[in-house]
Length: 72
Image (cartoon, rainbow, N blue to C red; front, side):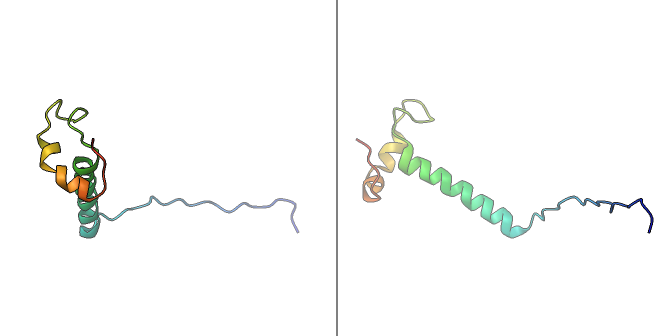
């Protein structure tokens, strides 16, 4: 036997993430759900992303109470 040993070569391949239609639908649905969650559950009028405008808060006011979100 020889005293030298050979080490195996490591071959790396790039990870390819296929951007399928189902992924696009999933990402769009998740973004829409987070936006809807913000407007119903978080937007309080005073801390709104629209400034001190409370139109969105008043529009979803009864729905937020029905879903159990406190608002005042």
